[in-house]
Image (cartoon, rainbow, N blue to C red; front, side, top):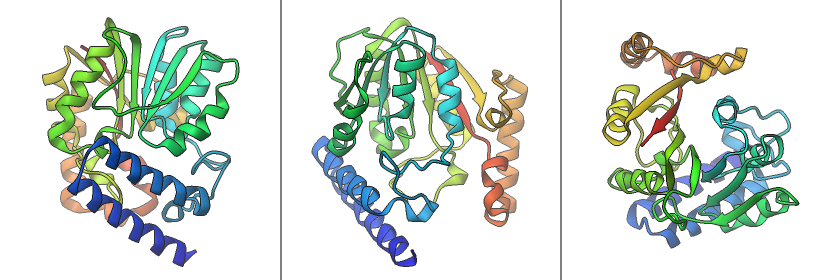
Length: 267
């Protein structure tokens, strides 16, 4: 196992260097195909995830972020998921909420494996780059992005938001999640991360409406929009956590003490 962890660290370190040198669509395809090839063989050793039926999903895997996004997505809506990862969210939206779903990912390996899930559902998995979405204007009611934005260079985030807003209908919503700055691993493929204050400022410049939903409450099945007072307290909390280094001391409790949000955005 330790050898597998060392191999994963070595791979991620090199792939991150590759992306910093070249952030073209073709480079992203190569990088994430290499990562997914490793995951299919070894799982995700750094997080003790074993190879599952699809990529690094294990039987015990729970994603509270995906649960919130699922609950915020209206039934029978036209959905675009950008960077579908393990493909389960897109599949559940098509199967249980009767959504018409198009899902894109930069990895041809991910697309090839996800296509097995399409069946008779109104669901299609395609290769695609978040910075150049191959759909016409105002095609979707909902655009979903979970753990994607942080993988793009900061100077390309505006291009990403432009594409999302372009393909959304006028009354459409963008459901967004990216991991918080304090939760970053020493070894990952994240090129730009934000704290709550930084991300809120960015999103308010890009969208007319910004709502936040607290991920940690998903554990107890609570879905409630966060108040302005709660957000201000969160910003203060993050500063305290960062200065005291609590997130480095408490280890497994990081997911409870470091604030995480799903954003519901309107263009």
